Length: 545
Image (tube, rainbow, N blue to C red; front, side, top):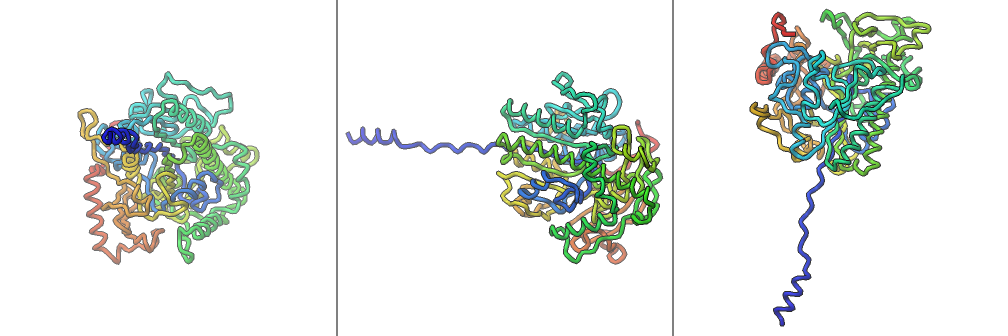
């Protein structure tokens, strides 16, 4: 009897439940195109970016995060976790005939969507690809490299207002939206398709990876009229005043000490000839008509950033409405520093570098579908406040990017800064870490190059990121960072040496005072360059196409 009662009682004892495996986080990677370091509000800018600012307030901002200097190299590096030359995209899309400069990602480099499939993810891309050869084949496409669905630009830049033939839906048999005549604007279309793809992921009931790569605010400067009106008067004060205003806000945000000094205006180069032509001039040195033209260019640019933020907000709202925001890792950054092309006046026309002074009726058309502008080196200098140089270069103005990380379930800190140096090579490692995906050893029969980066998860908890160095090269502009030491040179120039802890804006060149340190770091750069396929450089005479 006793044994019977004991058995009955045991049958009612609750068996401890096996703990449910935590849900894999969704991942949304948002990339802006040619956005400067100080453009968005939470990095000191005057452009209205409430949605990005809200992500920063409830997430993290990195003060020393780096990209790959220019469109194609950054995109290759970001998606593969390798340095650009290791992936074969050290320059742009032309095949230069040597390993680091093949123009498209090589088979030794796997991409984030390919890797995340091993963890059961659906993978989507919306926006600018720019990792294919041109022409009719446009190969490889995002679908070839692991994305389930794609809508956007295969190439690098085109009209924001003209969908056909610049914007593509892949696979080709997938449902495509129909926009009424004159209703298409690419930034809004990217928001539309991002929401479509999120809805598809919910039907599939799988975690998802969404790569949302805006073409804003890359030239041509195209924006909707009502957005331009918001900034019609903002930039009439000129780039000198804007730089001062931004730097004041950056100091109030804690980005720089209260007694920090704003550097003088940066130098610039004419892109066609690669020679230094001077320093950006004072705003007041221009006459009233030229100031009006330049202010309008920047107003259009600001409107593009504003509209990008609106569409980021649409994605955030959709995640929140569907109770997915808490377990979605959102990362935001820019592919390079602000774009100086070609000089302080900017250029007009797709062939560049012609400049037009817009007056009268032509002034009112600026930013419309019938125009094609850049905003020039003076505004690029302001957009990178307080850093020197721009896109293409290894100085901080070319490679430092705003970087926001938001993941309520995985990041407990709110509104904090992270000073750990991070790099786009770290994004792959982070995705592998948080997803539980397996990074492959082979791609078919080809050995896959191991990840170069390190997961950012320790930095989310304010712990250090362990690495030996970070390196850069593009168009013979080169740089190396080890700890707080930065070695950097413009193409054809001598090495410069900076202590970034005490001189983050690279004003005090210590190369002549510390030649042994230059020699030591230069040897490190040479070793890195050989290991990562920066060297050998391509021979222009042997260029394939």
